[in-house]
Length: 310
Image (cartoon, rainbow, N blue to C red; front, side, top):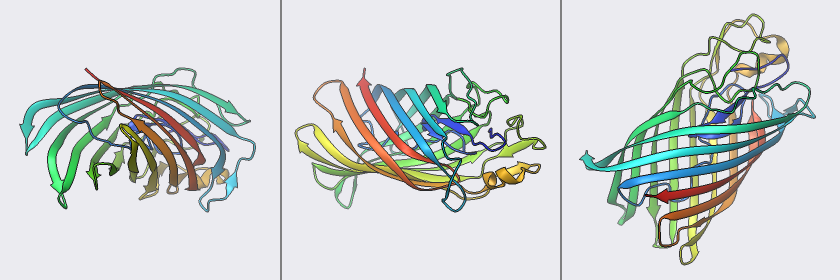
């Protein structure tokens, strides 16, 4: 991680994980990248492209009060994902695997932020089982169980408090599903729980700190979508994050930074469009507005999503 004397840390989400996210100590997490109809329609090879813009000018402490007035940050991320749902079966579902590589451009406006100019984020790989054709309460139900592994291979330097890589491993199982209440009305959820290793090379400005290990975190994405005209859905969607334990800091943070090992929290709600015409291309657009943040930034996130089936 990195934080700076009187600063905070940015981590870019992978999936995405993922994605671009401003945070204090949490590594890359998927906050709002995947919401509406979060299931492939069947076996095959898919390419997902996410272009996400995140902006924040509010930074919150443990009580949700604003700190560091005048600081601003904006991140533009390209999130590139390949997904293969194979015809091979196990436990009644299709075996599959996905891989992701993010790149990002970061701009800051303030006195305390320093960003790594390199743009490559941490890649991840995720084997999964995907179930089609099931029913829940008599309604169509598609669901998936995956184990994501995020590797510390992105751009990282202890000389910056903002990096596109996190310098830690993250193991993150998740369960996702889409339930169709009617042919037009559906809900999708992706429920994660993340475990992290420690960063043995934290930001050099943290004098006396040898390592930082972010606490375990629970988070989920959600959506409720309705098909208003053929192939076009509107959605209410968002995400929620709650850190379940404090960060493990080897050393003593100076008083201005003592809140950085507290639990992070944020909630977001927004709206979106999802267009799935006949053919191979699907397009989605979403905007989320964060609120209730504690120990992290609070901002606005907009994501343009393309899906192409080969």
